[in-house]
Length: 288
Image (cartoon, rainbow, N blue to C red; front, top):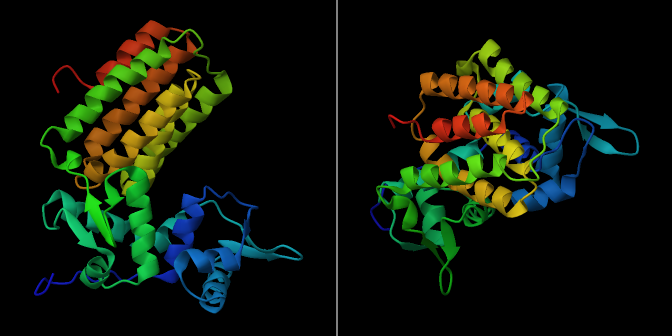
């Protein structure tokens, strides 16, 4: 890697803590453990405590007697998003690694030390990114101390193949004999979609918009009761995000939300065949 330009990522500890909270799916009232966060970040407890106190000053975290630090504000609150900006520094590093891989800027195999030098980050920060990439299925450990990138995602038809697989899987799950989804769940799905439209798509970060979309589809496919289908969709979404984050089209996102609302309406009317057909068109439009 000698002679290559380094890409420095300025990682804010407070933003890193918020990213851990988001990854852990914590909700207001959940405890935040200094030691656990420090271990995940590869730092001592003192800077973690200092940044948690800063988050307390912002009203995002609070302290409770006999419990310590507790999450006060939902992770998608505007105050949290303003601190994270258009995605946390951890997310930026993750996507920088993904983009460099997809653009062919990285070799098929590389050592952790080379990656740390390239992005000017610590071993703990690099390891956390690599752990997520490994869980998502596009990086794996090579022999010795190296890491190997999957070539599947660099195939020119990778994204369209993902969407075609989803167009086979998700509509079929709606027609499964055990498919069942209650009105309260559907109402919650509708509320989230309408909230995004009313607040304005441009006020949300790419990670949040992607997460909302994944939640919608995973809840519906989960109503089939087939956990293998749910697991498959989650794995596809983990890899699909690498493509989605590279280009953002708010008009397309708005059309997706309108499709979601149509599907919810059909499910509320128990029109499963129509909902299945609409889902297929949503995932693979006839003109797409």
